[in-house]
Length: 342
Image 1: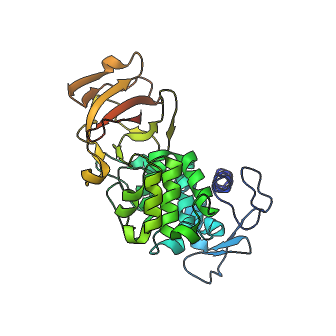
Image 2: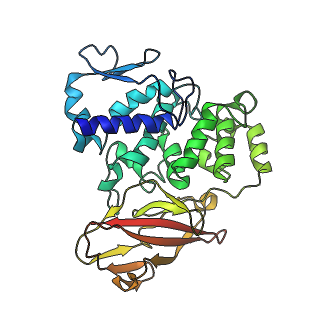
Image 3: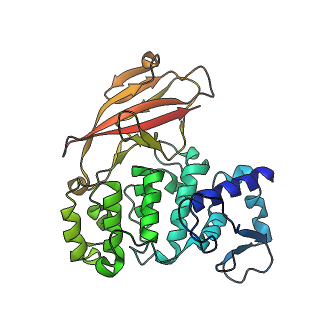
């Protein structure tokens, strides 16, 4: 129970540094003054569980106890409790896609909490392996999924640009910054904010996620061209946990990929994941892989991008490999951070 409550406190603090709620006077990056109350109650007047927005508490049914206060379950997929907790952070933001806008902004904060605090991405395999909400905890599982609900519009940006940049985007959208909605509309203003903050033209990304040019609007389309930004061209693989943004800096938004304790194969070329529409999102080829000093001989190349790996002797030590892909349409090199544990 103590571990669970420490986790809830951590999740609440992550949410507080991501978006403002209704009770703390816009406090950000500080200690919340009015802590959200979580009640196990037989009175749940709406749905499975309910957030009493404006009253700063939530009601959860008694049978949720087994998941809410079981730490092993909590750190794998705590979506339900987080969903209700983050209802208290909803306001007029994340409304690019009307299909999901009523339940979108609270779930966006969930994505950030998943990226920073739990093990949801640990169960993945080279072909998927994740079910339910953990499918949003890595990039490769939802990269080519334009589901009508639209949450992958945001999860793809989080994993492509990192938690801190994504928090900047959330803050800007929640506060209607840079590009006012009254001028550019719900979808256009959001696409412009994403482009400005992430440093990429996100027009085609929004198009892919059911926000066509008509919904974006002419004013926003003209404005994004003025920014003169390169287009968003994503690439990843199942082992990827983040990206290098320079030679010395980068970010991580997922947990390590688990391999066996005996010799195994890793194929960065075969399992490379890109958008199916290469005209809009670029085409990629495996470029190279860089290994930890002293570990080069443990990775024996079978063919370009395919390796036979002898795992580290220390089962508890994470191994890092930097995998580079070349965008054949722009010649840009994208460097994926890949982490492996046993």
